[in-house]
Every structure is written in structure tokens, then in C-alpha cells.
Image (cartoon, rainbow, N blue to C red; front, side, top):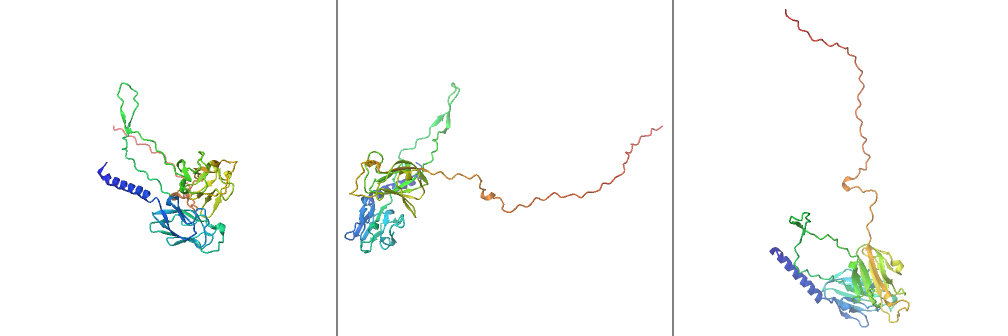
Length: 366
């Protein structure tokens, strides 16, 4: 190794060790520091998520305080209040979402640190709007895996021999090393933001597919899941491997959300060849229900989803070429080309014709 590169390499290794240590030590991001009696406030999923109650309706006059144990960015899986004066305070900034009017509400994408504090507070409304008391479920942003650099030395390029048509002369190796063909990195279409419980959902095929935990291997459909994916590029769901929401529209639903709308996908016909756009959010909601029984007509592993997309091709160019910025055609009518100057007619003059003068002849001397 060149001596000048050694400090950079050592610094990178130190940073890598610190990242691995930080992830290992701060696997728990949140804790519950205080809560009122009767509330369902809790920290779940190994300390990576906190909630007013996992699929539990919140009550009146609740007050819960959550602490942040490690810096992270908040992912909002659920946030709906029954009234405008119920809500969250994150580092003093208030959030509310009465009756779920805003699909992507709450402290979505807010960065928090070790000194941050999250407060949940509700007023006394005499238990009104029972069906709208959803509350919140917020998780820490999922960390990408830390990949250690390879310690194996890079092999020297091999010289490719040049074919020699003359078997009697030695073969001279080429001085140009062989190079692997360039392969452009594939762009993932989906990113998993959070999954409750851990492993409830996943992304596969280099980010082209999303699925719940029943990944077509005979595993059973599990109740009590919440997952959220972000669409990273415009895509078309061209390959629907499995899609079967629960027949009851209030249970086991897959929704597509943006800043202003939320749409539940009702069936496999609606999802096939469905277009998604960059920035959309795909949310899987599958609440627990002790009274729910599986249908005898459909095996358990048929429920859930496994969807794959392809990147939407860019718009084809139009037939009319767009002029380059520096070569635009002038908008004003060009000046008409001037004619060549006309020459006035000059009358011809008849000059007398002169006979040619004969050359003088020399007179001989006597």
C-alpha cells in the first residue's frame, strides 16, 4: 500500500468499526419514560417502534412521554386522531390528524437525537368518535446493512494471448489486460421503511418486488402486521405473483398513498399493471383479530401479497425536434434579400470601321 493512502484507510476502518458498534449498542431507539394509568402507550419491536397502542383505540386524558436513545429518522406507520386537540409533540412541534384527513400526516421524516422527547397527549372528549381513535405507530428508520471492505488483495490483470497463425513463431502476449464488460448497477424500485413485527414484510429481487411474510413457500398468513414501502422510481406492477386481501375490507388491506390521497387496492384485477410513481407509499395493514377465522375455500398462504414491478420507460421523443438553446430560429420575419443593382440601358454607338494599316515594305537600295 502506498504510504500516502495508509491514513485514509485507517480512518475508514475506524469509522466502519464505530458504525458497527453504534448499530450493535443502539439497537433500541426508544423508551417509555412515563404514561398515565389505563393508556396503551408502549415501546415495541425490540425498542425500534413506539405506539399509543398497537391496534388498540386510545382513550381520553392520556399523557405519555417517550425518550430517544439513539439518533434516527422517524417513519410514521399510523397516525390518526379523533379530535384536533389530540396529538403528538416532537421536540416542541405539534402534530395532529383529525379523522385521518391527511394520508401522510405526522412527524414523517423528522430527525431526532438523544436529547429529543416525544409527548402524546389527548383531551377528555367523553369517549366520542370511538372509531377514529387510531392513535399512532412510529418506528426508527431501518438502517442499511454495513458491508465491510474486502481484505483480499485485488488480483493483477491477466494478459490475454494473441492468436498466432504461424505455429513456428512464438506467441507474443498482448500488453493490454483483459477487462470485464461494464454492467450498469440496477436501480431498486422499492425500499422497505419499517415492518412490525420484524420480518413481517420484505423486499426481494434487488428491490423489484415487495411481499409479506408468507413468501410463497407454504408459510401461513399471520395476523397483526404493519409495513410500509417507499416507491423509488415510476413503475408498473407487471408481475403479480400473489395478491389476496382479506374479504372484509377493514382487515388485511394494501393501500397506496401520496400527500393528498389514499387508495385501498381491492383485488388482483386492480393491482395488475397498476402504475406507481416515485414518492408513493405502499402500506400493508393486517390487524390482529381473535374472532377472525380463515376461509375454508382459500388456504392461509394464499392471503397477502407478492408484487413485482418494472421501471416505467421514459416518454418517447416527439417527431418535431426541439432546437438547441443556442440555435433557436428567429421569431421575426427575416429581411427579404435585396436584388442585384440594375444597369441602365446605354445606346450603342456606331464607330467607323477602319481598315488595317499595311506594314511598310522596305525599298531596296541600288
